[in-house]
Amino acid sequence: MVQKYGGTSVATPEQRELVVAKIREAIDLGYEVVVVVSAMGRYGAPYATDTLISLAKEIYPEPCPRELDLLMMCGEIISTVVLAQTLRRHGIEAKAFTGGQAGIITDCHFGGARIIEVKPQRILDALKLKKVAVVAGFQGITKEFEATTLGRGGSDTTATALGVALRAEAVEIYTDVNGVMTTDPHLVPQAKPLKVMTYSELCEMAHLGAKVIHPRAVEIAMNGRIPIRIKSVFSEGAGTLICDQLPSADMEIKTDKMITGLAYIPELAQFNLFCPQDVNTSGKALEVFNLLAEAGISLDMIQVSPQRITFTVKEALFDRTTAILEETGLEFKGAKGFAKVSIVGAAMRGVPGVMARVVNGLYKANVLLFQTTDSHTNIGCLVRQEDMTRALKALHDEFGLGE
Image 1: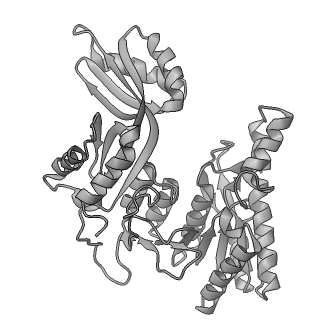
Image 2 (image 1 turned 90 degrees about the vertical axis):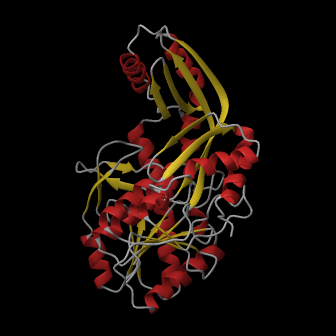
Image 3 (image 1 turned 30 degrees about the vertical axis):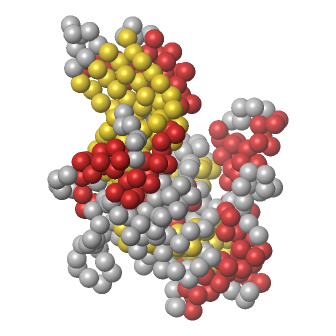
């Protein structure tokens, strides 16, 4: 069994007691336990990763990526040692590991490395000695022995990668909510916890803005066919099970709801480029996209049609995008103040009328729709930022997610 705990779960002695209780429960059920932890606390806390980064930037504003990764690893290592000591105080044998010591081998992209291999022999050795292996998440080591960090959501990725390498029965991701919700309960109070989801549904929701787990972590678990269960450290609830098949049954997950949940991405800008009739739009789109890619600007909701190219970027990139587009000589319009609201559901594939219901829900809520994109499992809608919460509530009601 692999369990992952976020930084807030190990930030105080009281919260660490809850973590110890979860670990002991798994041991009593006969599991060998591997625990992955994040850095303790959030910005301002002495060991939080953002606090450590601020310390370095106070001295010199542009730290070297290699040294910055070394510093960013410290928060997780501190959490690992503190939790291992806490387990020992409760009579549970434990051994702490850095990501590299745990066998997490990565490429050499500092600040956003990808796992290329896992060699968990030292973890297996600790488990044979009946010890809980406590592993620092978010980090690894290259084949040249350089320390690296995995980027946003790296501890989730560490947990699922270890789960696959160890052929664990499941990976449990502990958060402050009891599983995945139909949408953000802070914006839609009617949001409900989901009992079961497919890997593809959770991956879509994560890519589309849901922050419960990083999509890369889901992809690793999906490829290794390791079930994920997202649970609350504060309750005994079963949480949300993520898999392709129900346990002990050779059947696909079925649901009576066509839509599983909603996700959102705020603070977007939309650009519309206009091409003259005598210009090959595809060729011009290639030029525009190459220029933006070279500048490191990621695009979303891309649509190319004769005489028009439309896409969105993060609002913070509006000025940089504008400056690049001015170099193309094309007429264009850009505007800030948008948000992307998406419905997600594996059961919508091939079902007529889903888009009609999306438009109906937004129309009844008086929400203007500026652009849409879709795939087999999601439909994304571009709306005004000030309409985002109203759009989420309208679609949540339209598809009966609160029932």
